[in-house]
Amino acid sequence: QVQLVESGGGLVQPGGSLRLSCAASGSIFSIIAMGWYRQAPGKQRELVATITSGGGTNFADSVKGRFTISRDNAKNTVYLQMNSLKPEDTAVYYCNVKGFLVDAGNPSGMRYSDSWGQGTQVTVSS
Image (cartoon, rainbow, N blue to C red; front, top):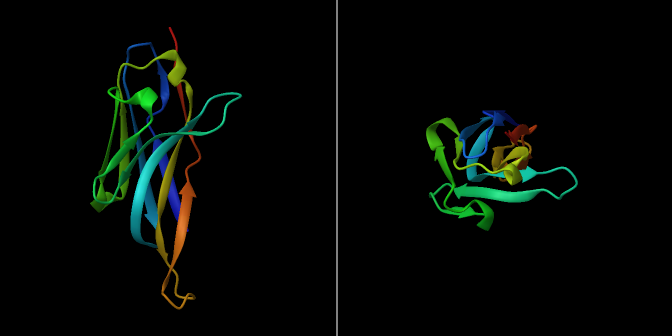
């Protein structure tokens, strides 16, 4: 299993900044990609940003130029720096990790995993 511990959410005024962190732990063999998704009330969960093990990034159009994503491969941790926050950024933000776990019961010695964090609330309001 993979355990994901998220932190950094909170209440911020429009134009402010927040930094989210997500640390992955467990029987991790390798991580393919880490990322952040968000879900606002009454809306579907949507991609915010992802980063691959090689450093390739992908951002939602709505956050390009305002958010940056980075990762510390040694710590299996991903960060989301959110600047120039807007009220429409208000949502629960979820960490996602895609990769392979050690699985001694599998002939390959590993199995694919797509794991989600518990979510952290980000509220942008004056």
